[in-house]
Image (spheres, rainbow, N blue to C red):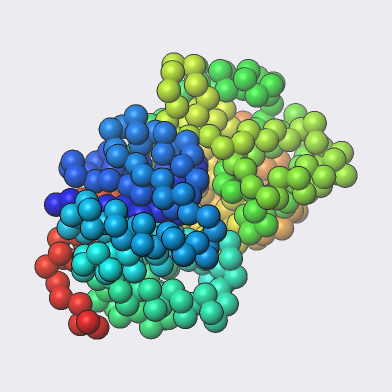
Amino acid sequence: MKVLHVITGLGAGGAEQQLRLLLRHFPPGHDVVTLTNPGQVAEGLVRDGVRVTDLGMAGNRDGRALPRLARIVRGGRYDLVHTHLYRACLYGRVAARLAGVRAVVATEHSLGDAQIEGRPLTRGVRALYLAGERLGRATIAVSPAVAERLRGWGVAAHRVHTVPNGVDVARFAFDEAARARARKALGLPADAFVVGGVGRLVPGKRFDVLVTALRDLPADVRLLLVGTGPEEAALRRAAQQAHVLDRVVFAGERPHTAEGAHAVDLPALLSAMDALASPSADEAFGLAVVEALAAGLPVLYVACPAVDDLPADLTGGAVRIPCQAAPFAREIRELSTARQARDRPPSRAALQYDIARSAARHLEVYAAAMGAPNPQE
């Protein structure tokens, strides 16, 4: 089977990293087109031996992008097109149909209750989404919560397949040497208690709650934010106004796998942390939480379907709290006092999301999409 993946961009976001990880567990025959931003994940895919094409799309209304993408699909003689993220799902589904490919699968990575990929879920956004969805054969939901939202919108139940994101648990195992290396590179004291936040620096992630909580925590507590985004300047101002800017480290985007023995990638940064805090109240899956649990970290979170969908006896290490500074400050203070041992095995929750299992389930969806007729055609 020859498959083309179409994705909106290839920076260092969760969907982008997930695509690279899946491709490592798929058989040969998968190519990638990015509409925009061929960033560090694109570079990693090329190193992995994947053919990546940058469509060079100039904004949402670039009328030249659709025929260019259709020509790529037609010229590649692909059996199936798999789209990822909102813009790519719209353009990729239409291009696949124009090129004569009927087997189209989309993954819904970021559908929350009130937003999709950070944009408000207006009536127009929802209508356009549903119109595009009818051009495909199947939509993969990364959690039961997302699947339920899709069915609630009117997407036919037989077209919705729940396939949770996957994690390379071994890659995130705690590493004492990586911890020391990362702390030294970022200027973090060896004896500091480091609370991490991982994700795009956008308002919906609510990292401002952690900045406010830091004001009421002991001086040896540090906040390490991993990611970039339009909210960074506002977070810096908030930290300065709270007189904690010297205790906040902005690490920028970090790949899941960096080249070189001394690279400071995301697994190394998780080893450098003592806890992870996720104040976002609207998540489709909660990949950062699962990766932190794979690193053996205690986790404080507001919303994480990946954890909430599991039986209670598997969720040890993750504590759900309200999206307010006071509860975060209280829980972080207790964790900093307890000082967890450095030997940190992955939690049982993380072990439920093995990437090999996710990849195998994707291939089952592909096979079904190749063989099933579209009742709406």
